[in-house]
Image (cartoon, rainbow, N blue to C red; front, top):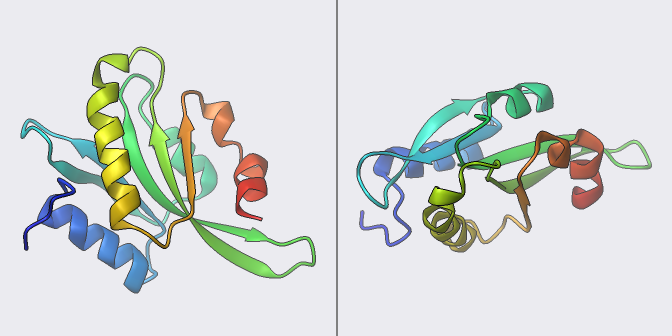
Length: 133
């Protein structure tokens, strides 16, 4: 399968697994030694805290995460998020990851919540829920 988005076959499989199987809620992608190719780094069922702790302090990542939360009326809801993790000190890779972020937005048209985070406090649970509500 040809993929103009620069996703490896493993990345496509991980994203398909996330969307179709529902036994995982998070896929974290990173670039490897092969220029322009994103590969999955984490494919798992992470709590919000585990997600935040899994992000490296000095390297960018692209994350697709299914956020579970309760609406104001108490209804359980889920919303897919696309997170561009770009911590301070990783700016040398920003252009490459920006291209990947743009490609993922095109690859995942049903994901409507896109955010860039440079600090862990920008990924606070209540902030993410507010974006998803």
